[in-house]
Amino acid sequence: MRRFLFLAAAVPLLARADFLPCDYPLVSLDPGGAVVTGSKDALVEAYRSGAEIRVGWSLDWNDDGETDVTHWAPARFLSEYRGEIFAQLPVIHRQRPQRDRPAIHITETHQEWFAIIGSNGELRSRMHDDDRLGERNVPTQWCRVTPPACRSGWQLMVQTDTDGAVLMGSKHRLFDAVRRGLPIRLAWGGRGRSDATRSVEHVAVPDFVTITGGSELFAQLPEHIAQASYWDAASSRFDDPGVLWRGMLGTDGSFDAAWTDRGTGETLRRVPQRARVAWFAAETCAAGPALELAVPGGVVRAPASDRNE
Image (cartoon, rainbow, N blue to C red; front, side, top):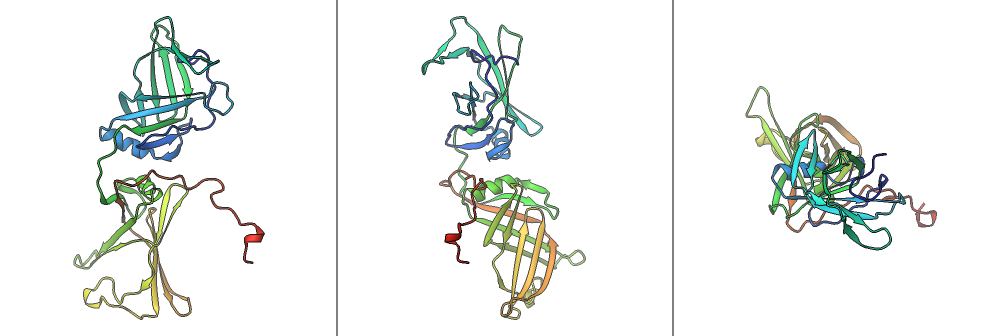
């Protein structure tokens, strides 16, 4: 094993993510570069906008699952490569944490430390007088130094086509908006191929939203009395008041529509479709961070004493 050139001894791989707090978080990553909270899209977006970014990482000297030291550094020189962000850290004088007491000293001999850290979890470093390269995987936290410009109001998060491909924006930006508790709105429509005047556009606020597997979002629309026509302006009136329409759209392009007898509950008609959808969120300057909702034990079966069975 190559020795880690920043500390006095080799540092074992940190097996778990131990993250650092920051006011404007972008993404938290485990040692393998997998997302724990936030999104890499947010980091890439901040990088491309020229935002000032800091990066933090944690080390576990004795491999006991407890963090021994954490570091923060400004990301002075940033590069984007194949969807990952890499930051060269400021050159510093080599330092030695004291294992027997809470103290960190610089070394007596002048040695400068150079390092690059990536959103793939890799930290590589060397001393100016040593050709050997230290290699380590570490959990990282990437943050903005200043808040993003506040743009209150409805903002487009992502637009997806009928196959679920992203046309603009980012699905993860939409997911983060949901996890931050922001109101969601979606819009879709269509136009006749032979008659361009035959068009319809819909906007709806969903009643129920689900993020599945961290990769797709599905929204159930409010149930309402079906219209006599959704295309013809002259026929835009309520149809049979006893028939209700409901729909569910997904970021994968799916669109499931059903007409139901409100008295019997019988499904009278069902039309699976595909739809190009624009997904919006009501951004606010006071919105909090994205919460981690999909956690082990987040939903458990109630004990028998609590069940009404």
